[in-house]
Length: 199
Length: 150
Image (cartoon, rainbow over all chains, first blue to last red; front, side, top):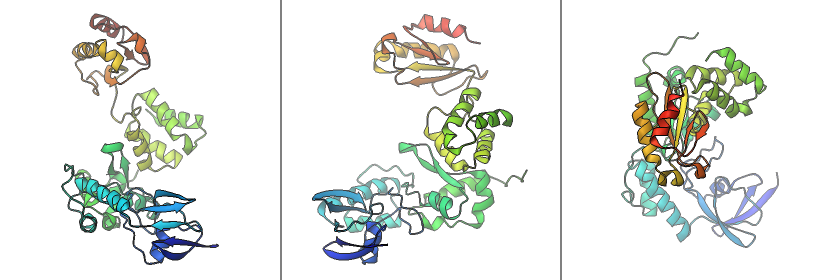
């Protein structure tokens, strides 16, 4: 693995090839806000909060740092008026869905986001996919997944699998940046009286 | 739909998980909808998690997870059909079948859906039954067309 030297916020950062900009920044002690990132899971790029400005080949681009691989000589800015504005609007949009999420409240304070900017539509899910991916990649149980699409997309447990696996695991609960996951699970619990006997 | 029928469809695609959507489409066209048992069997046979199948089956409008009637009526509500009176056709068909768009009647005879363009605007207003387009519809003609289906 060859070493790559890049610049993040005017600081020289050494990283290894194959790392993402987010990994490199973390290693150098530079914080980038994330909601859908988890070190054990594949990068997903859903929340877009980790958006940074990169200068490569003389051009400035906005990229999701959790997906963007490091390159030699890359110049990255993790804060700028434009990035702050993008993050602020993203937080405001997510707060329309999950107004009382502790993580979002903290971020809102930092970026000056107005939690009441958009009309409330409390689905409580911000589609970070942490629970879905954790169940799929780490636990390999596939007890829950996304259903539907676009504005109607939501998480859904498969009752038969959930009744068998979830009660003793619940490891995904603490990953959820809102309380949507727990609510969905409680609903499944209520709808599934007893696990069906194996055939 | 029994397991043999599904196995036949899966065999047609050599049991490849990458043909999942084709397999689901074939089940949908033979059975008119995707029952839970069928999806569970497909999941087991292809070794694809049920969450993934559920995601795909709810993503595409071509799939239905609720029972559909023997005949599917699509009424075009696109711009060209709309200005030529598609809403009157829809009202007539709703009155004749007793169901609203998205519903299926009790005898499982008809399912009704509105669509946004069938791609033959010159024939508008268009009503499609089981994939067969009926162009230049008028309320009285729509009733005549529906009488041909049992």
